Image 1 (cartoon, rainbow, N blue to C red):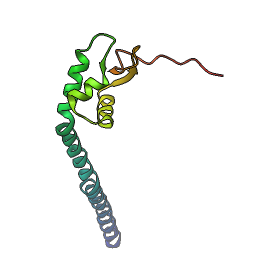
Image 2: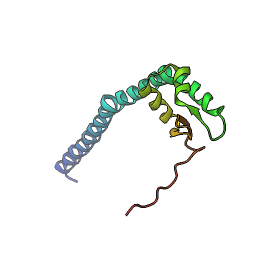
Image 3: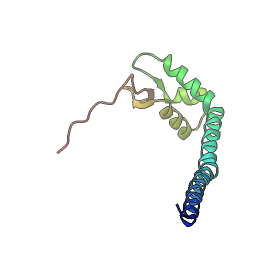
Length: 125
């Protein structure tokens, strides 16, 4: 091999190494600049959610677990025990897998969806 061919091979090898190093730097930069902070923010939000609403969710779960079979708990009772406003209480109840329904006496109650699944509505033509 001639000396010129060896020089070209060395330059090509250095070029390949530079491309690989640049790609690794780009991926590392993306992870540390975007994905890392995003994951940390999600974790912080989850911890905040559990710290802020965890005790209320625990009370709601306990109340629904100990309700009369098929009757659930009245919304008024849930609201009185937790002290939460209407919108926040509904959000937490939906978050723990509950659904609202109207009892035969007209009061609004909440129960787990698994204990009172939705019925399929007939097709209206």
